[in-house]
Length: 400
Image (cartoon, rainbow, N blue to C red; front, side, top):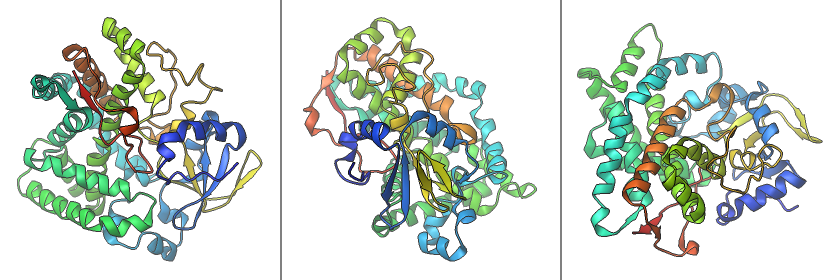
């Protein structure tokens, strides 16, 4: 088969057809990255689960490449700051960093956020109900999680919208060095904002997660200054971007499957199962974040060589018929739904309980308050974000 180009403009539109062909014909598919390096797309579920736990794959590029190679790959200090975070670390650093923030995402703490999430969802929908139309992404899916993560971190209300531009810039340039220079001004502005914000919190600590992390920085070297910046960056990006896509993709899926939408409206108790199915059917994250081989790996007759990049397709794995019955069918009552939308192994998404709760409340509140809605444009007019890592729509206009 022809080499797949996940960076091409039409890949998102036809990705699931491409994934089907990959699973059937070439489950370990070699591509050339924009920087000229070799990478491998892993498309089958069982391979994905195995590799997500494989210690022969490492997350931290500093441990994989020489200092010179690392400098060439990440030439700008600001960019290095924003990749040297918990998600791109390996044990023991990963264990230490995760332990510092996981106490803020326990099931009890997340469940206590339910009233506030409900309040935000109600306020957002109340502000658009009278006009008879809205953009699910801009009016609902984006503001809900960014309001919540900003409140958890103590970020002022007036600064929140700026994070959309900054986070989009970082994700836009992910694995695409030619785009990096285009977005350096946004990345530097993000860095400068964090410097000012952290300085203010050091001078005047509050009852928020940022102040907790600053305290961790000063206690027994639990967190370095560089790690503090990187952790805040990760929490801001991961704390809202994937949930934006979860909510947007869920509504889009319901619009495409009116029978499932009606079933969920009539049986709200299905909401937990429904959100798991939305996560599987149209995963918010296209590929698991970067992993590099630290030794040669043999898989399906192919040799993944040391220092090759391994791209595990979460989206493809979640549609694998070897794992899921009728994977192309959206079924909000599907049980034993062992999708990997939140990853697998030690890097399983720390914020998964929060994302699930936000998704459940957002979808259920929309169906309760605006039970009859339809797509306000043609399907062909909808555009996917041109980001390698994520799967999400730029806009999703509806009328009601």
